[in-house]
Image (cartoon, rainbow, N blue to C red):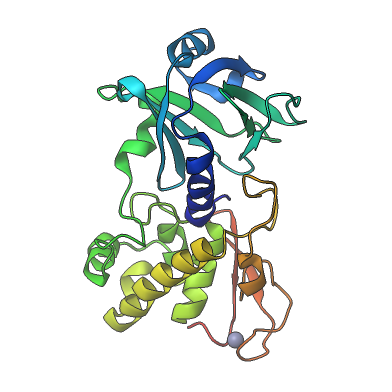
Length: 274
Ligand SMILES: [Zn+2]
């Protein structure tokens, strides 16, 4: 959390609010959220730069600046972005403030796990390694059954763990992977190499559908995630398994089970998923 649909929602809402604005000041409230370069260099490098565009790659939010520099936000578990008027004070968990011409962008992160990176076009800082190794996103045209089949071939790990692997399913996280496996009727504990072609076809479609529906519902608000105006997303109202352990399955009435897989809480229906 937040996963691809939440970061996509933030990107879409942020773009019209900040595109074309200039960064006039940078206030780092918690030094450790600035992962690259050093905090002092970070501010110097971005003040005076214009925000050309707002984009997204997997779960990373990107502010594209002049000089081909990019500000990359990794929101991790609880990072959110808020845009507030110039005359308001930062909020309780604000870790970084970017002052723009006519508003302020706040990076709020209660758990201080989220990070911000400033990279230039040629630079590939090792600390941001995962960003350069991302696989296909489930909503991209390249994410086909053949793609998934090739990536899962000979893999004995449990399917749930591999769906969370950003080299395979970029942007995927715990919520949408549980939901996709439910829709595809596949038990999250299954070994990836034992999943049939027919099931892989269903899974490809399910992954694509849950991500697309998550986006059209402005994301899922179950813990810290809010939209840039502080409102909740809407997809939590459509979840079939995530957060529903012990409750009846919406299809068959069986109690939804909860198991730890690779240290991640995983929910599934013991009857509908095989
Ligand atoms: Zn069921």
